Amino acid sequence: MAEIKMQHTDVVIVGFGWTGAIMAKELSDAGLRVVALERGVNRDLSTDDLYPGVIDELTYGTRGKLFQNLSRETVTIRHAANGTAVPYRQLHAFLPGDGVGGAGLHWGGVHFRVSPDELRIRSHYTERYGKKFIPEGMTAQDFGITYDELEPYFDFAEKVFGTSGVAYTVKGKVVGKGNVFAPDRSHDFPLPPMPEMYTGAMFRKAASDLGFHPYPIPSADAGGPYTNPYGAQMGPCNLCGFCSGYVCYNSSRATPNLNILPALKLQPLFELRTRSTVQKINLDSTRSKATGVTYIDASGRSVEQTADMVLVCSFAYNNVRLLLLSEIGQPYDPVSGTGVVGKNFTYQNVAKINLQLDQERYTNSFIGSDGAGVAIDDFNADHFDHGPLGFVGGSAIWSAHGGNKPIAAQPIRHGAPQWGSGWKKELKQSYLHSTAVALQGSCMAYRDCYLDLDPTYRDVNGLPLLRMTFDWKDNDTRMMAYVGEQAMKIARALEPVEISSGLRKPGAHFDTRTYQTTHLNGGAIMGSDPSTSVVNKYLQVWQVPNLFVHGASAFPNGLAYNPTGLVAALTYYSAAAIKAHYLKSPHQLIAG
Image (tube, rainbow, N blue to C red; front, side, top):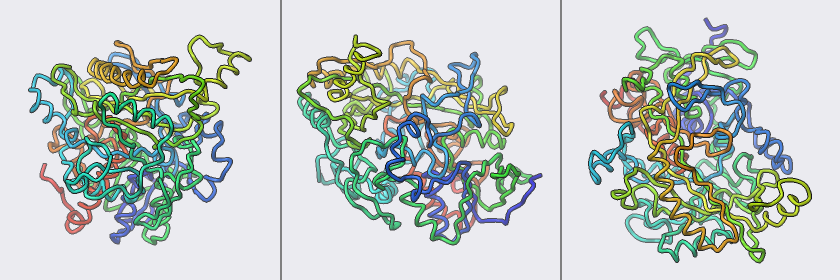
């Protein structure tokens, strides 16, 4: 029994990042009383983004002020089901956020849509290449929704985020020099693209000369002054270089804290409770209706919050853990292939080719923004013929000039001294003349990559940690090797004096010791069949109609693109369906 029982509310939201903020705004505006529970502290931009403290690299970049405290709760990780999982104790491979805004406060701002074919990836590949093209054990499946259904919500999300970019086509008409592979749009981007850096201009020319199709990366770092539909004001990015992992002191990067929360604070129907760690989603005796949640408050007391609707909006794998702890849905079994909760956990394939240019070309790498870059999509999704290549998926290739930090960025040429005065001299020279060609690729879902509860390790409150079983597969390695060859053509065309390839070698295991990406997906996947998915296309749990689960946990496959754009569009789509259909008569929106 909980020590405290709070007054009943219409909606309780677990987690307050992008998805929690979007749903809180949409549903409170619809007249519902909304309580949002965030386990971390408040992140108030009026005090937390003050210059110059906010660009303290030790506090933010090295010691991870905005990231999850792994001493209180973490995950355990193993490469295979017959291995022993151990806790992830140091923040390296991925960086889950903590506090109001979540990972949406410390992200870099790259804001893509999705290739329509990837929303129906299994159907698309089997139709084009045949059923035998999908490798044995690969469990990638369709999202159960189309791009055309989501397009209006991509469009609105970009307006909320103040996204900078340039379209290729709008309503079927070519309007600009954007991504020729991008799907059609109903409107152009709200803001023009970010300034093109020197390295981006070099990348553009090299890629064009090779016959590829470069375009400015879409960015939620504002390319100019902007006021969004909620009245939030953004200032133009000043290219300070302190983006991912930091609070933007210039109010230039879209975050839930900047772009939505100020409007929510004016909404009397909304309440945000911080330092509130949800332990369980409560169900009625039929186990087909959620009655609310139980959480631990800042004083360590057990609190029950009842509600008519429960929305799970935390970080992707935390969504899965809460479902498992609450015994909602059938846990996935990789041996039998049955069950759905924990199924299709995926990561993202990344690599970098580091370059040293001659001493006459200054890259000034301390200047930049994570969204100020140039990319090609020629080898992303199914924009190229996979038939003779024998793998599924693809990768974007780009020059992203994110701004190298003094401590974290230490580009040293091969063979240079590793310490002392020689190292300092080499670092000074290399820092000013370094750049990179980056790859960010898809990660296919496999039968033996999944999430479940760890039988050994527990969090600070005594609950089982989430266990992650994951490793790279041959398909992922071969895809990146092929696209890496194409990226190397661009790298060589830049005429560097040294090239250092970071492409993963065949047989290499997932390594948690170096940062890769925080783009983790799956485990509470969406689809059109309750026997193979946790939620429907409205992100509504099949067996519990008043429970919705938002975020990248819904992705049944890992995409090459950053997930936030698709996450936001799916969340707005879900909110629209709840307001238009569910609230009139609470029910299962799709027959299971």
